[in-house]
Image 1 (cartoon, rainbow, N blue to C red):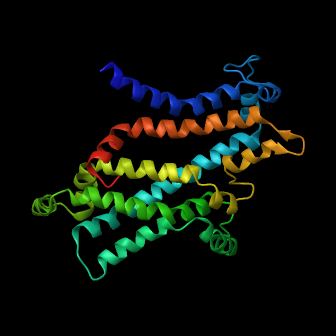
Image 2 (image 1 turned 60 degrees about the vertical axis):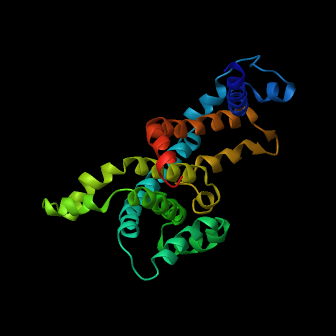
Image 3 (image 1 turned 30 degrees about the horizontal axis):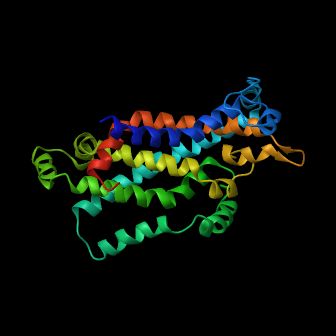
Length: 265
């Protein structure tokens, strides 16, 4: 048993090493980082975090990112739930082809859609807004959510729907109070992936914003200048970008486990 446990421990340590190194660098000065190799900060400093929490450009970058990511997750799940229900409960001409076509949006690189979105949102006045980025990310996240949720819904017996109708439930009431709770693991998994994909996507977020809704990933490029890189500040910003994802994983961890066991994940 001890030999078997060594491999997972080594693997986990291997995965945590880059995160540890990032956190350790965030408490160092740039000169110390460039000066040599050290496992721990020789001169411990909080100056890098102080810059982020006192400079509006930096902390608004986090607010902007969390705002459009949250908005995208809500929109994607709200739209995907009825769409996935339709695919799981009804058969119509071209349903399988349409279902596959939805997934092809996930296969295309974001760069393909950057210019069309830029011109469209500039024309309608949505450029540099949370809604612009949230809607752009829906192109990828809604098909993924539909695909995940349809797998969970297909596992719910149709007799549940029929019984609810016999008991006098309207469809909205049945869907909100009975059906969605029965697939809450799938909703949690879909929300997790929507949040993560939107959080780490940079190309569309950077193309569709300028100042008011600029994401933190784009602001992190400020650490590069003609004078060199502010590596300590960059490490601190990178460390803080891990926290929202860790919080989301904590709250949906049980749903994720069920999702990997039950759904299309």
